[in-house]
Image 1 (tube, rainbow, N blue to C red):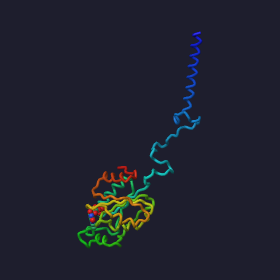
Image 2: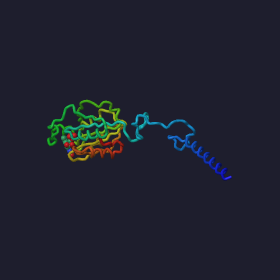
Image 3: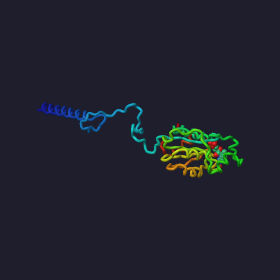
Amino acid sequence: MRRWISLLLTLALILSLAACGSAESQGTAADPSGSNSGSTAEAPVPTGGEASAEEPAEGEAPAAGAPSSVLIAYFSATGNTENIAEHLASILDAGLYEIVPQVPYTSEDLNYSNSDCRANQEQNDPAARPAISGSVENLEDYEVVFLGYPIWWGAAPKIISSFLESYDFDGKTIVPFCTSGSSSIGSSADALEPLTQGATWLEGQRFSGSASQETVSQWVDALGFGLGQAA
Ligand SMILES: Cc1cc2nc3c(=O)[nH]c(=O)nc-3n(C[C@H](O)[C@H](O)[C@H](O)COP(=O)(O)O)c2cc1C
């Protein structure tokens, strides 16, 4: 009798192990819960090895707040604003466009202690629009334009007005930045806004001409575009 009981127990054990094995085989790596309704579809395998969770798939919109294309446009008479513009281009991996005057400024033109110097005359003339040499190719492709200039008597040089009046900024975001001896960016950008119908202006930032890439990068981070990737 004891032999029969032991035989029955062994049989029950074998049957329960077999049932267990069958249940496990219904779960797959793609669906560890085992609730895949018997589908034989395999788990999707990433191709190319480069895709990351943050990258939108082809045809998908980029993450909200991340501009697709950024241009750094600047005027610099003595190289200070150019220094900041180059930092920005490197940080944002953006296009760089120098606003070059058709007639370059000589040091005498910039000698602001002479009330008659060219720069002072232009700043005192509301209608002054110094001509620009060359132009931006495909400005329409850019979503965000960082606009850099030196402060001249508390304002942007008139060549910045020439630049803004040369293009259609409707729908674009403009981010002003400047360098100066000590003045803040103040209301220099407010005076430019009416020249760009339909554009959104963000608050600008003043830098010293020798500001480091890290300083500029911190500002870009604070703008919140999600693009402040220091190079
Ligand atoms: C005509 C003129 C006016 C200036 N006015 C001011 C000013 O009002 N406040 C100030 O802090 N710096 C002033 N500066 C100094 C410049 O803003 C500063 O040197 C700037 O960094 C120059 O930039 P850049 O090298 O890109 O031309 C003036 C310079 C010039 C030539």
